[in-house]
Every structure is written in structure tokens, then in C-alpha cells.
Length: 483
Ligand SMILES: *[C@@H]1O[C@H](CO)[C@@H](O)[C@H](O)[C@H]1NC(C)=O
Ligand SMILES: *[C@@H]1O[C@H](CO)[C@@H](O)[C@H](O)[C@H]1NC(C)=O
Ligand SMILES: *[C@@H]1O[C@H](CO)[C@@H](O)[C@H](O)[C@H]1NC(C)=O
Ligand SMILES: *[C@@H]1O[C@H](CO)[C@@H](O)[C@H](O)[C@H]1NC(C)=O
Ligand SMILES: *[C@@H]1O[C@H](CO)[C@@H](O)[C@H](O)[C@H]1NC(C)=O
Ligand SMILES: *[C@@H]1O[C@H](CO)[C@@H](O)[C@H](O)[C@H]1NC(C)=O
Image (cartoon, rainbow, N blue to C red; front, side, top):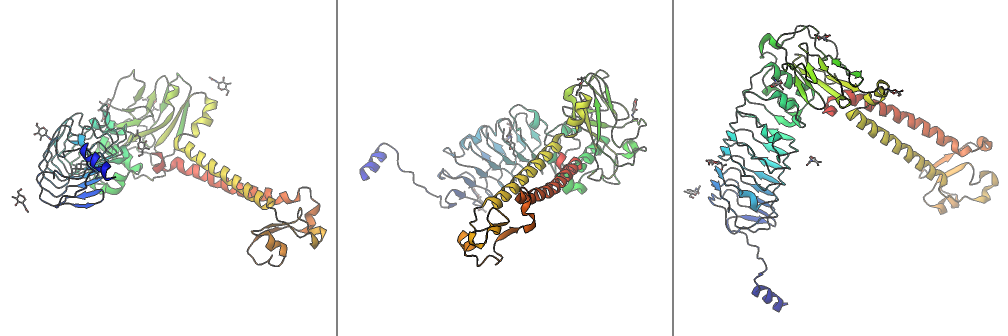
């Protein structure tokens, strides 16, 4: 063995010696060098670390070789509370498996192209409390898996929409914090078309309340998205403030909003009124329609377009296609407090009218919940049958000597843990076993033992069916599930 070790040493494979720098704390794979006034990263950090904490130091730049060797197990890198203002291109190529990167409370001002190159597995990026004014195109290009991005407390004046559209960018960004920035306008129409718009935080920005923003905020509120539920008071367009009378609608219907279904055959045109809006045409009204494939608004006036929003908010579909079927939302400033169970949505069904009635109603989440309810029902029925089969078929040997009339094939069905105990006949009534005892009188019925099976099964099935239908009814109007 010693020879083998020596051989390894000679060949240049010294067994790696895990050393922890004296000014760091190491706990197996966690290395903390926090609060040490470091202006450069220590050179001799063990590379087996999965978590490296360099926060509260005096780092001012991350050059390309800020760590000398590859840290390919590093999942978490904390660089918060330094003075980092410069990150060189490919600086994170040495940490390709990072999952969480914390650059908060630094002095970043401009995010340049390629500074995050190679972080294909990154899920969480913390950039809050910097002085970021500019995000150059393509910065997030390699971050395919990014899910949470914190850009709060910076100096952004433009919504970083490129984040969502750029090729190679995050495809699954579910959380974007832009609070405490300098945004005065947001691209309402683009935001309405994002798949994960429910996780965009915009509070504490100097947003100008106009009809479009008001419509967006009302829609998000109705959808019960977390940013609006948690920070409603920190958004503009409150009860008193507002864009003036221009989007206050005189003729708003004060009726409860209910989901409506509109059906049309392919190729025909279809008009879908906006729920909750009055019929009279209003100048300056901004109405967005979120359709399954696109978002359109009332200020687009191309009369040859497939979707047209008429001045009174009604959506006109010209030459309806089968693919137009689905759930539509009319987003407009209605200036009303929504009951979350009210429905702003409209179901559009394009296709065979008779087939439509069946396929149109079970849509989206409704279908899922119905399926869930049905699966639950089916598994309950199966369980009940199995339990009853078990009860009936468990081989309880019975005492034949007790007389022929109380035989085993007959009326006493006993779930017994230990047949010998039953056989002894002494502890049959101590309450520790389940027993179904039928009256002797029913002996003559054909298939007598099966009767309770049917009854029990029937009653339970009915109960579950009721539950199931209630679930479906709820989810159709429950906004938390529609998102
Ligand atoms: C931190 O280090 C710098 C030099 O790198 C030194 O001037 C400063 O006094 C140190 N601060 C503290 C709190 O040790
Ligand atoms: C981006 O580039 C500019 C100009 O080259 C530089 O001043 C700035 O520090 C760079 N930003 C980062 C985060 O490296
Ligand atoms: C997006 O995230 C969800 C869970 O958050 C995950 O199940 C899904 O696979 C992800 N999609 C992609 C394309 O990464
Ligand atoms: C309405 O749609 C047009 C064309 O898609 C777009 O240019 C415009 O910005 C939209 N209006 C608003 C208020 O978003
Ligand atoms: C909206 O206007 C169109 C034509 O201008 C009209 O046909 C339609 O009935 C109106 N919608 C409502 C809800 O009144
Ligand atoms: C619609 O379906 C019915 C049967 O469900 C069929 O008889 C009829 O021809 C269909 N119509 C069209 C336009 O496909």
C-alpha cells in the first residue's frame, strides 16, 4: 500500500489534502469566508465545496480567474455585500453547476453581455440593492433554467422585457422582482401575454396610472396573483388616485359576472361582448383581450385582422378557426371590486355545435379537476370493493361443531386476525374484531351475503359523486386555479 501511494505521488497524483484557509470556516462542504475584509478571493480554497460564502468583504471585481481551479461541485455562491462593480466575461465558467448566485448589495451598474455565460443550471439570481441602470441585450442568454430573478432596489427605468423574448434566455422564469426601481411605464400588452405573469413584482415604482395599467392591475388582482394580494397598497391606481374620469365608465353593468360560452362554426365570424362593460361606446376606453394564442387591444385598428376589438370592447373574430377555441379574458378597467368567484372569462368554442356542447364545457383546469375527481371516485370504489372482498373472502375457519345452521358459507362473517382465537370461540365479543352479522331470516335469499355490498357501495358512490361535482363547480369559478 505504501508503495502504491508512493507510486501515485511519483506519477503526480498526490492524494488531495483538504485545507481550510485560516481566515475561513469550513464545515465539510461548506466554506464561509464572510466578513474578513478580503479584497481578493483566497487562492487556496478547497474545491470540493458546494457552498461558498464570501459575503461582507471588500471584493471590488470578479476577474476571469477569480478562483484558480474549477469548482464543479459548487451549487451556492454568496457574494453579497461587497463592492463588486466589475464582472469579467466568463467569470463564472469555473462554477458551471451553480444553482444559486447571490450578488446582492454590490455596486453593479451595467450588466454586460456574457458576464453570466456558462451558468446553464442557475435557478436563482439575486441582484437586488445594486445600482443597475442598464441591462444589455443577451445578458441572460445562457440562463435557460433561471426561475427566480431579484432586481429589486436598482435604478431601472425600462422593463427588461428582453429577458422573456431573447433566444436562449430563461424559459421558466416564474418570479421576477422589479420593486423599488424607477419604472414609470410597463408594457401592459406584452405582460398580458407572458405565461408566468403572476410572479412579477412591481410595487414601489413611480408607475403612472393610466387606463391600461389600471386594467392590468385589476386583472392581476382578480387572478389573486401574489404581488397584488401582498402589496396592493404599494401600487398606484388606488381608490382615490387614478387617471381621472377617462377610464371611469358610466355604463358599467353592476351585474355579477358569469362565465359565458359562445359557439360558432368554423369560417363564420363571431362577436364576443366584454363581460361587465356596458354597450354604449366610450371614447378612450382601453380593452385588452387575452386569447389562447395572442393578446389584442382596442387601439389596434386593422380591419382585416383576425381579432378586432370594437370600440365598445366587443371582440370580433373573423373567419373563426378551430384553434380559436378556448378561454378568453377581457381585461379592462371596470373600477369595481371583484368578488373572486366572479368570472371575467368567456369560453369560445369553434366547431361542430353539437360536439361543442360537450367539449366546450370541460376546458382547461375544469377538465383536470374533473379527471382528478373521477380518479378519486374510481379508486374509492375499487378500495371499497377490495375491502368488502377481503371481508367476505378472508378464510375464517369456523367451528363446525357449533351446529350446521351457523356455517361458514353463511351468515357470520368475521374479520379475524388470528383464526385460532376465533376457533377457540371464547373472545369473539371483546370488541377487537370487525364482524358483520346478518339476520338469520335472510338465509334463503339468493346471494344473500352480497346484498350489503351493493348497498354500501351505492351509498358511498353517491356521496363521492356529490363531492366530485362540487369540486368541478368550484374550480370553474375559482380564480386561483384558472391561472
Ligand atoms: C480592510 O482592508 C483594507 C486594506 O485592504 C484596510 O485599509 C482597512 O483598514 C481594512 N478594514 C478593516 C475594518 O480591517
Ligand atoms: C460593463 O462594461 C462597462 C464598460 O466597459 C464597465 O464600466 C462595467 O464595469 C461593466 N460592468 C460589469 C458588471 O462588469
Ligand atoms: C419549469 O419549472 C417546473 C417546476 O418549477 C418544471 O417542472 C419544468 O420542467 C420546468 N420547465 C422547463 C422547460 O425547465
Ligand atoms: C395595442 O396594440 C398595439 C399593436 O399590437 C400596440 O402597438 C400598442 O402598444 C397596444 N396598446 C397598449 C396600450 O398596450
Ligand atoms: C358593440 O358594437 C357593435 C357594433 O358597433 C354592436 O354590434 C354590439 O352590439 C356592441 N356590443 C354591445 C355589448 O353592445
Ligand atoms: C356535426 O355533428 C353531427 C353529429 O354529431 C353531424 O351529423 C353533422 O354533420 C356535423 N356537422 C358538421 C358541420 O360537421
